[in-house]
Length: 399
Image (cartoon, rainbow, N blue to C red):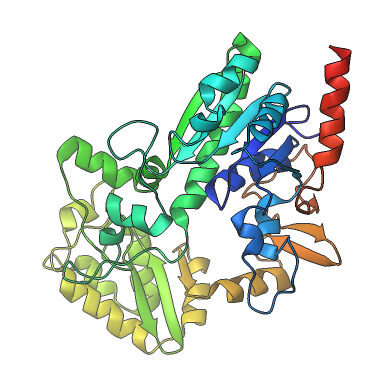
């Protein structure tokens, strides 16, 4: 089956996670992605997991670069930069994630690429954006988490030390936003014939991940409170509880859900307790989220009720009556469970990487009328350099 971005050529001069994830989306949606690498290869080629065999395409690199072509060019040398510009002349999209000002030294900034390809969609991904006093600072995920307030939103209390999200969430979000912005710019170009320079940054991605809280502060100057494992709504039973055999997260946010939860736990009297709950809000037509008057008291009631019960049993019983709940699992436990049964139909993707198979979660969505992601793995370092150079020479002769 055809894919939506077939016929689109992308020059990807990015590295590590955010930029390569952007171009991974484009590659898996059908674009031809040419990955520009230095002679020693992109840094992730050297990042192997414990016990992983030697080779220039470890699983982490392959998962981010499957389906791309590799072209080696030393952009620090005039001939290397000229090769990249020659490729850009044939492209629709150009991606880079160097610090602002770096690629300009080699004649590969937006102005230089636009000069050889006026309608190029050029995406610059950086830590802090393309302008401003901090633009040239280096950035890594946990540093941006610290800067933007994300670390201070995690944790159980205002006195607790800062706590980062346990994976590179901002890198991944920046990659997703980069892909979204490129696809939108390509649509505009098809309609109006105009290119675009996209300024995507990790700071912007971080704020989008915290969108409701950032909007509240910008509008009303409300600083978010650290709520630990409690849910966003603030309902007293949007929380996580220790059970006899593990932990359980519940989201009884509305009065109807709260009543059902209380019925399962034998705590129906709380629904009539005007000292513990705002009963006017609780019984209002249409309702909203449950509002506690004595939060600590309610929390203790539910902690005591869950403490002697099975998390697995509670997950099943609560979901059966319409109360969202989930036993707390590790990532591997969750993935093994859903693959062994039919609870969730995950659109996983697998890539053939030599004699091995690299398995990934896919792209996060599935098209009904489209070929699935997966298939060809990541290229070897410089695997397509010779073929692409021959193609450029042929096109030059034709001109």
